[in-house]
Amino acid sequence: MAVTSTYQVTGMTCSHCVQAVTKEISALPGVADVQVDLAAGAVTVTSEAPLTDDAVREAVDEAGYELADA
Image (cartoon, rainbow, N blue to C red; front, side, top):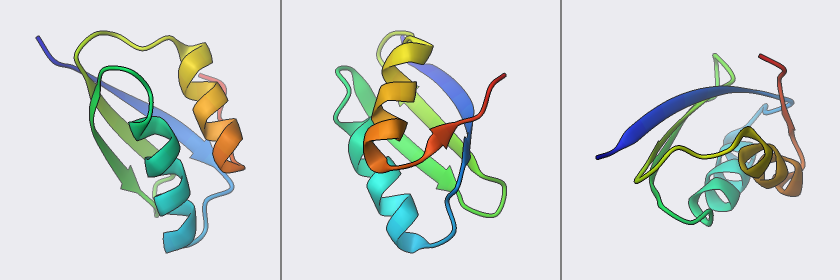
């Protein structure tokens, strides 16, 4: 069963930002799809199982951006 979660990411300003965040989150185990809404700073992730916030935060950090606190 797929799980969809949306995260707020700060610091994204261009298509390169979108590509970097998408690449890093897509590399997480079980991730099936990543959609980035640049204008809203939102990243919607569909995965096979729930992802931990720490895993998503680490991937976003690796891309050079910051996961906003919930």
